[in-house]
Amino acid sequence: MKFIDEYRDKDLVQKLVEHIKRVSKKQISLMEVCGGHTMSIQKFGIPFLLPGTIKLISGPGCPVCVSDRKYIDQAIAYARLDDVIIATYGDLIRVPGSTSTLDQEKASGADVRIVYSVLDALKIARDNLNKKIVFLGIGFETTAPGSAVGVINANMEGISNFYLFSSHKIMPPAMEALIDEGVKLDGYIAPGHVSAITGTSIYKRIPEKYRLGVVISGFEPVDLLKAILMLVYQIEKNDPKVEIAYTRVVKPEGNIKAQQMLEEVFELRDDWWRGLGVLPKSGLKVREKYADHDAEIQIPVKVEPTREDKGCICGEILKGIKNPKDCKLFAKACTPENPVGACMVSHEGSCHAYYRYNRD
Amino acid sequence: MCLSIPAKVEVINGEMAVVSVGGTKYNASLQMLDDVKIGDYILMHTGFAIQKLTAEEAAESLLVFKEFEELNEKLDIEEKETGKRIV
Image (cartoon, rainbow over all chains, first blue to last red):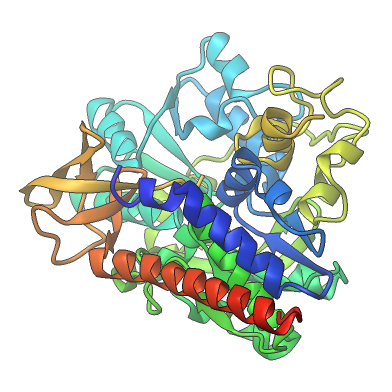
């Protein structure tokens, strides 16, 4: 496939690996903060290609994993209302809430529908005027503009039974919080598709304030190795900056139209992240102007008390302090078929990626 | 979650397009992207075209790798000649 196959080229991968081995002298840890990168890195076995000087650690880049269990509990509470249809991306359906999952609610008769796009949720709303359609908005800057379009279109078309339940978050506060917490890092492999929307400016404080490099990477092995090589260069030369390795997709200014839509619909609020706690101005809340389409305001619901599972170290894994293999539950009590924590449910969760590609 | 795939634009109908991913057809909204033309490659995420892919940039980034390759070969030769490890 064009724009993919050439970035899986074996010879190119070998050349890049060879070059990284030559240039890398200092002992360094690089963190990827995108669940898609976590998947690719494990799937393509990137850690096994790198020299012993480079350690890769996974960060809080899986939106399903970092979201509060209370969010799932509230979605389940909505699902239990007779006049509500839940429209959700498939990622959320099996995530454990305190006592149930959306999948279990669906099996018990709740109307929970998996959609590929918010546009499908709008169609469900148009076709079911006597129901309230609650769209579960989860994800970072890549996914949030779609939810913004949903709200804008619903508002313009007068689709009054469409509601967004936002758990959207933005990436930079978590990237800074990890450094503030003292997680030992030498550079960030930054998310490619978040950056396709935001551009490079969101990361500029990281080299300025923390003297850490940020290189925006694509998702193929050649992309990732190129980003790693660029970071190694920056570190060896002690020249931290924001660079784009994924130039075929990411423009320095990002997608301005999508940024305007985000700005139009959302405002920042303090939000809770698994492993990191409450981070100031890290979540996206629907603006008052669009309150008619905000599920949190329009559909009051009683939510059961949140209960976290004992023994799950998902929070520490998301911070890069621990590895999935450090968890006593990993691949024993916790498997993709029977997940304990969100990091095992989501395909891009570290535990799931390790289970599939790097279990032994 | 942020998974997005490169797709070729085949038909444009107002704000919607039919795009092809390795031969399979999908609908994609063009609401987030201006100036999309038939034949363009776009990056598709949750039913939206979120960015255009530029063939020139793609070709250029592969060229950069060729430079690494050449640099590596040059360094190999130099190392052999001088008997010292350079980088």
